[in-house]
Length: 141
Ligand SMILES: CC(C)(COP(=O)(O)OP(=O)(O)OC[C@H]1O[C@@H](n2cnc3c(N)ncnc32)[C@H](O)[C@@H]1OP(=O)(O)O)[C@@H](O)C(=O)NCCC(=O)NCCS
Image (tube, helix red, strand yellow):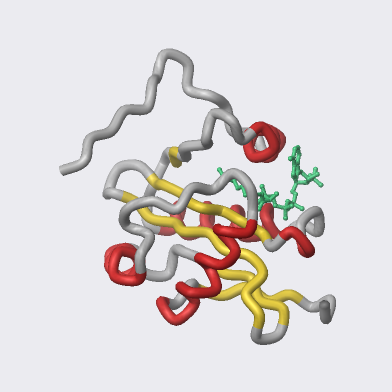
């Protein structure tokens, strides 16, 4: 651990390292669209929004960020357990929100697994609120 952490845009060459962190932390489920091709398409549709944190050459934090022209979305925010509690999650989140403001998003939505109490507590601590009356739904197409 060098102490100096840099952040930069998520590049598709970071995919393997990102998957490795997503698999290592609790609370993130790797799903359809998270393979290399799916993430490459997501990054191409949402340039300059997703972020990684680096300790030297090692990826130690990651956040996927995009928008659909109306709402912003942040997915799979994760920090390597050895680097948690040092402000990195907040830093990546703030950078995502800054990018979404830049592209004109006014509201940002996330999905948190109902059993991810630690993740929920992080978002609430950062000022996010549950959406009363909304139930997430989905269908495979
Ligand atoms: C959630 C996660 C990204 C937070 O990253 P982190 O680098 O440890 O968090 P930070 O150090 O940036 O914390 C930022 C602030 O949130 C607070 N915080 C962090 N985790 C918290 C928690 N579980 N509950 C309440 N507050 C929390 C910190 O105390 C800090 O507060 P401050 O700004 O008042 O000083 C990280 O714990 C993680 O990767 N968890 C597993 C994956 C996950 O659940 N991701 C969310 C998926 S929806």
